[in-house]
Length: 371
Image (cartoon, one colour):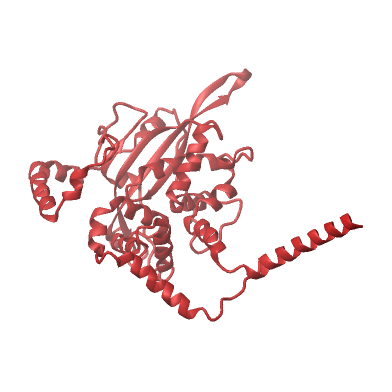
């Protein structure tokens, strides 16, 4: 595809950038980055997940610069990420070490440790709360003071809570296959281009980086009929995972590991019912697992990711949702938004060529008619 460079447009571009800033500040007010960080948790978590970088203040800055546009914020944050040196690799993190903040199972009423509802909109009325229009910093601080005094002890206990995985109990009963550790070094899709057939580590990385709406939409299509799959949430967990790195000069002994912080993640293990043919044509129901994990609290995406993970483990060209090339190439927000947006750039040469072709065809048709 050919493009023509825009010449002599420097002044126009500079004025366009000024106009962009004008549109952001024309009401004479600005949103402080700290307030975006404090009050837009869901958007920050989405941007961090799609950007593959866990940094809440930087995500808040990107959101401010992008005027709340998630795709542009992800573009900005990925561009920044590409400039940051990678000094260390963390040790493998076991999700069983998660300090659980929220944990539910749609498959079982009673689970070891109990259902923990945590913070969720699942049980709200989804009605506009007009009182938020009158909310002030002072009223928030007053409410926080009352809440923390009431629930300080409960919160302290909950912050230390680690719980076993629900599906481990099903594995012990032999109802689902055991999950063996894979000690292969995972591929890194941020450093090496994706190739097909892809590895599972590549698929999981791209799914967790995928645009939340796109991942959700494809998973919904699976449930509606493109694969006729109806999964159940075996376990959904939201909590914080510890991150440790080895001492730069040690050989990786446990006592030489450094704890550098923790990241909040959402983890979903999905149960997929399948019918398996046994001896003499007898069919039995078994369960397969789909896995999803992403930064922050983004439960819909983690569940959708688990559904697509299972679909891509069983390729089927009959359904786009089971085609790894279709799914993995089309859920990336930067790639898809960038390609659609590039259509606004100059295409003078290619379009003129098409016009010339159409004119030539029309001219030949007229000559044939006249002859």
